[in-house]
Amino acid sequence: LARGAGPRSGMTWRLWSCTAALFALQTAAQVALLQVQEPKALVGSYVGVFGAFGKKHDLTPALELHAAPDLGCSSYQLPPGSISLVRRGNCTFVTKARNAEEAGALGVIISFQTDKVMVMDGSNQSSDEIGIFAVAIGKTLGDKFYHQLSSATESGSGFAPEKVVLSVSPYEPSPFNVSELILISLATALVAAGTFFSTADMRQSNFSSAIAPQTEEIQELDIYMAGGFCVMGSFVLIFLFFFMKYAIYFIMFAFCFGGAMCLTQMMSMCLLHYAQWSREKFMELPLMGPIFKAEAIAFVPSAVLALSWVILRNTEYAWPFQDII
Image (tube, rainbow, N blue to C red):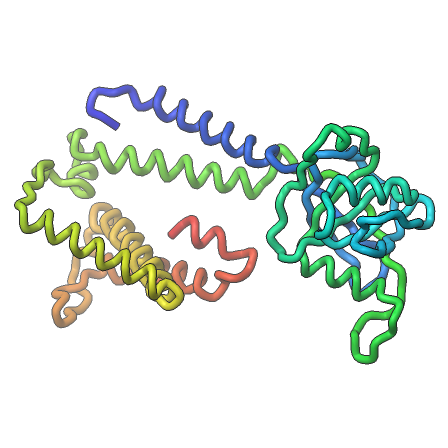
C-alpha cells in the first residue's frame, strides 16, 4: 500500500475480486458426483465433469451401468433406463451421447484416455437435441468400470462378476463450507498481518519499534550487483529447466526450512518484547553466534509445523500446515 492511500477500500476491492474469481472457477465446469452402490468393491463417491450439452438432472435414481460396443460410435441397444459406458475416440462426444439416447439409456459416461478430464463441448446445433446427461471421467475410474463389466472372468482379476449400479447428480458445494471459511480467514489474516507489519515503522510504539526498527528504505544497486543478479537468475532458470525433477526436493527443503525460520523469528520477537526472561542467552552456535531463550522456545512449534507438513504432505490433512507455513 502506498503511503497516504486508504487501505480499507483497496482491501475490500481485492476481497470481492478474489471471491468473484473463486465463484467463476467453481461454476466454469459443472462437476458430477457419481455414487456407486454396487458392487461392494467399488462402493463410494467419485467425480466427473458434465458435458456442455445434454440435460443435467438434479438427481438420477440408482441405474445399472452397461458397456457399449464400438466405442459407442454406432447404433446399439441397451436395457431401458440404464447408463451407457463408452471410451473416448473415433467419433464426437455428441455422436456418442445421441447413440446412447437412441439405445434407451438415460445417460452416458465417457471414459478418457488419461485422468486429465476436460469439459466436453458440442460442436454443432444438433447437440441441443440431446436429452440425456453426458459425464466425462478419468481413465483410472473408467478402467475399474470396464473390468467390473467385463463378461470374461479372468483369473486373478480381483473383480467379481457383479453389475455396477450408480447414481449421478450435480455436485453443489455448500455455501457454508468450513474448509473454504478457514482458507479465507487465513488469507485475510495474512493480508492484515502483512499490512500491520509493513507499516509498523510508521507507528510510534515500543512493540512497533521492536518488530520494525527505523531503517533506510532506499537500497542503492551498482552495475555489478544488477548484472550479477541477472546472470545468477538466468543460471537458476536454466538449472530448474533441466533438473526440476530433482530440484523439487530442494524446494521442499527450502520451503520447510524458510517457513520454520520465519515463524521462529516472528514468535521470538514477540517473546523478546513481552517476556524479559527470554532475552537470556540459551547457547552459542559456531558461525551463528548466541541463541536466546526466545529463539529456542519459538523454534520448537515452528519445527513441529514444518515436520507435520513433511509427514502429511500427500494426505488431505496437509493443507493447514502448508497454509500456515
